[in-house]
Amino acid sequence: MARWGKLTDYEDVRRCDLAQTLERSARLVPDKVALIYEDQLVTYKELNDRADALAARLQGLGIVKGDRVAIDLINCPEQIVAYYAACKLGCIIAWCNPLYRAEEFRFLVSNSGSSAVILHKEFKGFDYLSMLRSMRQELPQLKHAIAVGGGAERDVLDFDEQIEKGWGQKYRRADIDPKVDLAMLLYTGGTTGVPKGAMHTHEVCIWSSGISIPIMEITADDIHLALIPLYHAFGVGLVTNVSIESQGTIVLMPEYRAERALQLIQEHKVTVHHAAPTHILLETSHPNFGKYDLSSLRVGLGGGFAWPQGLFQRAERMLGMPMWHGWGMAEVAGLGIGCSPKDPNRDTSIGRPVPGARVKAIDPATGKEVPPGQPGELLYAGNILKGYWERPDETAKAIDSEGYLHTGDLVTIDEQGYVRMMSRIKEVIKKGGYTVNPNEIESLLCEHPRVKEACVISTPNPVMGESICACVVTRDGKPLTLKEVRDFMCDKIAAYKVPDELCNFPDFPRLAGGIKIRKFGPESLQEMAIADPNREKFRK
Image (cartoon, rainbow, N blue to C red; front, side, top):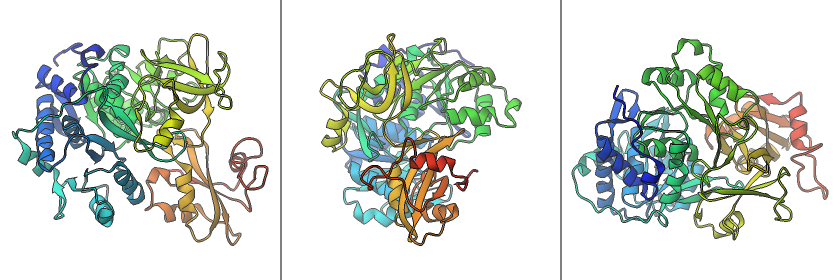
């Protein structure tokens, strides 16, 4: 196998737009494999040529710079092609989670004002085109739909046909100012739980990704396992962007399964393995773990709010690779704070901000900076969002006059600048790498004919980090079952948002005034739910 070495550093791509990073790699290493997907190998030249062909077709359909293009695809070559094709035209990608169902999908496409959507015809038995057909008339701004796997509809174009028609065609490459022009919207529950599109420029996307090239000593020889969804800030920032910028190879996993990840590491000699705690727990505890040769692994980054004690050491001992501890969010689009595996603070701290970024902690009540070591809300400045899409009100709340993002995380920062997470100020639930808005689930629960009142809280889960616990008060006073709740919700929202647990209550504990539910703290609903011996649990 050819040894390529280090061909790119952050300074080489810092002033590029995202499409230029692919074009640069295609010039440097045209015949090197960029993507591996099942039995497909896609070289850098092929990837860039396909992106050019799709860009030509999109432009021929009337798509222009600044238009939003929603990409609703699993980890697959078509997703990467669509991403860079849109970037070449100066479009703004609205990343969509392919687990989204009708209500979530409609909101994202409508809110972003997407004029085109690229989605699957079908995946794992779900008919994406039927979902789209059911709401097409409600989305007047959506002019074009392109389906991977075949159009099958008069007004839905076939992805492969568009590549064929655009092959070799000339088009006008957009003139992009990386500092100003938007590259993507990363939808997030943010600090309020309300879905918002975090707007990111090309410059911030490359800052949030490329900075890890020198930090983690990434080279063109690295093979990156894409087990994290690439529509996610962690995935697109630290897998897609980093690998393409540095001429690496991405091994694409369409869906995560622990043993399949181990097989791919062995088969393709994966060197870079970024993961959440859930991935590490499932892989290292798999009964067939010992069957696989994982000696190719060189480095990984552990993302997630808090890692269980001893899990970093377990990952390093069993997987044989040093693990960074990293922090980021949709508002950062990649790496914001990191801690080296060589740093003695790694197990207790998420580290210090990446070069060019800065942090501080404030008292949420007064807004004043707290002394070192004292708890406060984490404020982060540097490689952050430009604002929230069409939400100047939320932007003003989240980003202050000094350019700091108010993250909603409660932390301490010591005199050396190390950040240590304590808890979350806000109520969003983080389950297995997903951020879940409890308000959305509560609203749906209240549509159930037997539910009088509903409240959704988190409970500890040793594998997923947190479980989604639905707490209900029924109209007839008779208990509701978890199966009834899950059956009611399974076709309305993504599977990972469906409650894992259920508690029935005659009434909820209240704050002073008797109106607001006491969700957290002593004698709270969360405390009562965790202690409830009748709490139903769903476990696969």
